[in-house]
Amino acid sequence: MKAPTSLEFLTEALRRLPGVGPKSAQRMAYHLMQHDREGASLLGRALSQAVERVRHCASCNTFTEHEVCETCLDPERDAGLLCVVETPADQLMIEQTMTYKGLYFVLMGHLSPLDGIGPRDIHLEKLVRRATDGIVQEVVLATNFTNEGEATAHYISETLKARGLKVSRLARGVPVGGELEYVDAGTIARAMLDRRAT
Amino acid sequence: MKAPTSLEFLTEALRRLPGVGPKSAQRMAYHLMQHDREGASLLGRALSQAVERVRHCASCNTFTEHEVCETCLDPERDAGLLCVVETPADQLMIEQTMTYKGLYFVLMGHLSPLDGIGPRDIHLEKLVRRATDGIVQEVVLATNFTNEGEATAHYISETLKARGLKVSRLARGVPVGGELEYVDAGTIARAMLDRRAT
Ligand SMILES: [Zn+2]
Ligand SMILES: [Zn+2]
Image (cartoon, rainbow over all chains, first blue to last red; front, top):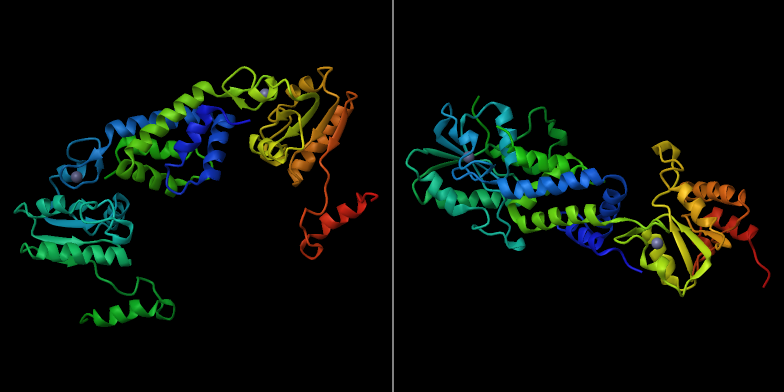
């Protein structure tokens, strides 16, 4: 007694999704076949369409359906500023602050030697070409303040400074609304070192 | 600034999978587009193929690509015995015990009035037709020993006994290898009531 071939094939394929193990792949396959065949068809079409249409912006590397994305084509933006982020979601967070009017470069990840993710995987050559176009004046590093994000920022900073570019990093410090009693010591130490005249 | 349409469509479609919220749908979509387009195509094909090919066995209701599944067609099995289980996975567990040589009926779920899952959703009419074919002598209820499984067993038992069928239930008791100190009181109470002469 075994599962029908196409159901086994579906269960195997669902395991390609990050965070989906054998048990949840089986649960998903059964759920779709039993309760949501329309959803299964829809997801099938969405996958084919995305594979066909989604590519990386030739300029900033984010996902787009065009050669160059809308943000990069926006003439209102300051082309002398280039902000480097790990993901499109990070870019969206910065956009929502309304404090930045320059352009972006999206790494689509961070360096992580232990996972085999090196400079090629975060499109470093493409970033160097982009940043040395003669128009960019300053590169703002906005990778995460995690170990990997900091290492990535450090690596990019060294690479770009060697090419004579001005490189900056988002300020670290006590979060807005943060109570010192509940902020970790490392953050407070950093805020002390980076203290500013008032 | 917004995500490309086909990427948004994919993220929405991934939310049709059980247990996938907006954050993990986005993570999955980005992962596939960034690191595993082959996996995305494969999953797309697997979904279309499964929707097209997988159906329910006309006899036992399990998933199959044929009109009647292999198990139901096996002439070696005792057609007088019908074991009712919630899922194909439960059926597989029982097969692995090598203690049962009859046929099966797979409910594909259990009664759960709070979730709006009633007798129709567990194919009760189909089960009644199957069990009253004149060949089945005894129906063995092997739904789970959860609240919903017990309620389902009770409901099916009443329905089938009203039609003059012999209905039994898997025995409850202390698990093999179970130490009384670590078994819950309800299980021990049940084992005491169902005690057998040695
Ligand atoms: Zn772009
Ligand atoms: Zn069958």
